[in-house]
Length: 506
Image (tube, rainbow, N blue to C red; front, side):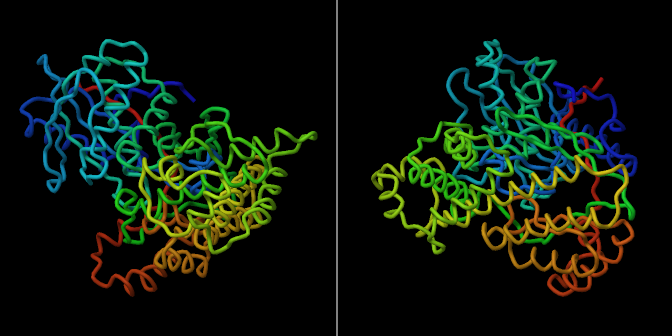
């Protein structure tokens, strides 16, 4: 895997053959629309894709391993560098519902972003702010004198679909800002790390999976992404199988907006998981080290600290199984813990609890389900471990037994997301049930959940059967006014795609 974001010379280096004609036309239209909007040609195009996660949901921000892949749908930013001395940014979108914005980049201090406002250009500002911070950290002149830009955005990753449109936008924006300011070689891992932090500027307690898949994606391979001791990614492939297999994405049409529902969904889960780590540590007389989790400590930190004091060594799998036992023993309240109960265990005041865990990203909850959230994180991490173990030790060609094993792990993941993490929804459950009934090996939600998309592992000869079952038993039944085009767009046969790239326009 190259250390740097590749510069490509054509769309043929970016998309699979089946998408070539449509994507080449899309890039051409973007350039033409840019000229119509600004009166001059763009200098380059920055591109970063969405992702789909095979397994490992809601554990990246606890610093555990995940298994996503980049997809064809992406965010494109056509960019021209301003010739004037001012650092003015004009940003427009090919989708007319997004109004053009203009703002100045400050020479010193932070670029202001109102995270309480659901403003589309904030995602570009977030990537830009992260890029500026990186350039300042490196001592580059552009960090304190960034160039102005004209930008036109074209996104094909559906918003609220669970395919990480926000991460793709932030990654493409950060890449655009770095290239515009003279960076000819953009380190992939630096881009991922700045994008993870950047997305938090718009009010989301992001982990690192989405950004890693978007930047590091490899054509034909899923990515086994690890976060400790440092960010790393390993390509992993499925063996040849009989029957031949594929992944299919099915959209629920329930919009999952992490920004709007964060206080009771996504951000709340981050707080609950973090507090579970702190309570477990307190009950065992441990002090957790500060780490790269969104709130500075994680369940991975608890695992590492707990077993560091053990006199005998144990495997990662053995440790995870022990952690599951500890949760069941030390976090007995299935109904959840009140703020008062948590402060009593941790020995801190309500004010300290709120300031440390509930201020940066405000949340709303009466009870915090520490037991269920921790059980999901540890059991899901164990499933990822087993999934990778199956891939690593598979023969060159596998049969139904192997596919049933990996599919069962996906099914268990969906059950855990529904029952322990409360991040599924009835529509996703129905899509998964239909697919399993008609022959899917494994079906689960993908992304944050609470709507969005589902991912299904199936034999290629089952795609049409399951598609028609979805149409009859879900789309026609629950969305009778859905157009034929929307139905076709809702179901995507997906292969692993390439990650972030940029393209200079002659």
